[in-house]
Image: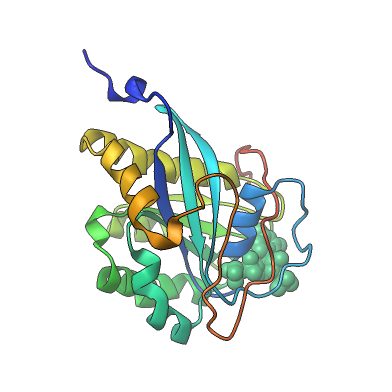
Length: 237
Ligand code: G3D
Ligand code: MG
């Protein structure tokens, strides 16, 4: 019985994943929490205004893989201009809403899924729905049931996270990257996919060896670097 997963020898595969969702839902905070665990939330976090990516080694049941995580602003103007670049060669997407903001949830169906379909081969992208800010239970506006109905409709899994406490943050990224990796393995394209990002995606070059970033100057810029990670304890919210 052959097992592709065990045939990995040197470099772990690298997959590009992208963060999507309205401004303010916590995309930057989630990435920061993942990539730099020692820096507390709110440390010098400014509004996201460019594109930036970080890379992070993650565990999957099939071994370690490297995730190149792209983060962008939720501004419409920005999104229209840069989404094609943003989605290029992406293998997975984390759709983020804020559990305390019903509008941010509605935007997923009204706007972000449309953007995905317009600019990426949505069928080929692994997707995970993330309801962030689950530490703010008293202010909740989006029920888990509602989120799960959305997931059923679009064929994805759901997790609630808190970039503030760290709950489920690592788990969310690990889950998505596992789905991406398993798809790649079952398609027999593990090596090709990793090569594609490493070699062909200009924006991705140089990012494979640790946290890194670049900004596409759209008159804005994300001021925060990487922040912090957390453990992946289960979310009590
Ligand atoms: P964005 O990248 O999606 O635009 P940010 O969102 O990461 O910039 O976060 C927007 C605001 O939400 C920030 O507050 C940030 O601290 C806060 N935030 C992010 N995640 C959480 C969370 O899980 N829980 C709570 N309580 N707050 C969170 P400021 O005040 O800096 O705008
Ligand atoms: Mg941001």
